[in-house]
Amino acid sequence: MKTFAFVSDFDGTLTEKDFYHIIIDTYLQDWGRPFYEDWKKTKKINVEFLNKILGSIGRNEEEILTEIHRIPLDEYAVDFIRRVQEAGGEFYILSAGTTYYINRLLAHRQIEGVTVISMNGAYKDGGIVVTPDETSPYFSEIFGINKAKVIEELKKEFETVFFAGDSEPDLGAAKEADIAFAKKDLKELLSKEQQEFVPFENFKEIEKYLEDRGWFA
Image (cartoon, rainbow, N blue to C red; front, side, top):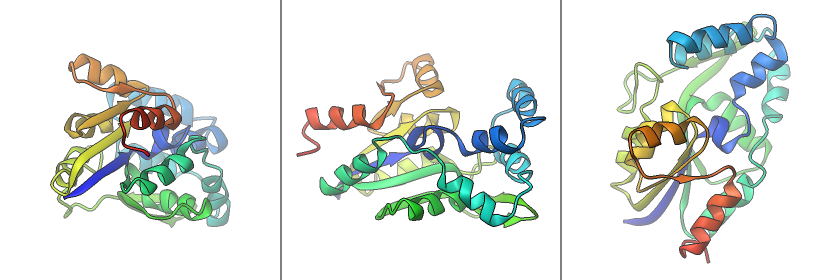
């Protein structure tokens, strides 16, 4: 078996802000924020929600690409990915968003050697359409992708699987991982279920945790 994999959620974990929040704040201020607040009262942030927001951008693809390039990564993320790779680990991004913006940001930031597991997306009529693969073994009717099942599969390949996340779609994956790092809402969700986790605010803290335990030279 391979030694270890580090798996990270993208929006709000590897990045400082969810892409859909960037879109709401930039283009949909009049109705986007109330829509988001009303949606959260009764529903989960799911594929239907993403398609409503991302499909309403109303800009050409070049303008949307500019916003993607501006997505703020955790300031320590790039160095952390490099440390994982130098230590012989493999880095995965596991997202209930879409490869449409993830892959474009990685290319823009020249981040290589990262495996992205997410949903397909395409530009259409001024916005982005997210399309879950319903034939995938990782398909989820709610979030589009079942992160827990992905972690289950990776544990067959790696001796240790780390996971970092921040919100409800990450809960199952955090519970399946050998060691989970949690921030924001995920901390509360794991605490409620009496699950062990390592709290963090940025990837420098995770780096120190792994250094102290001998994972990084």
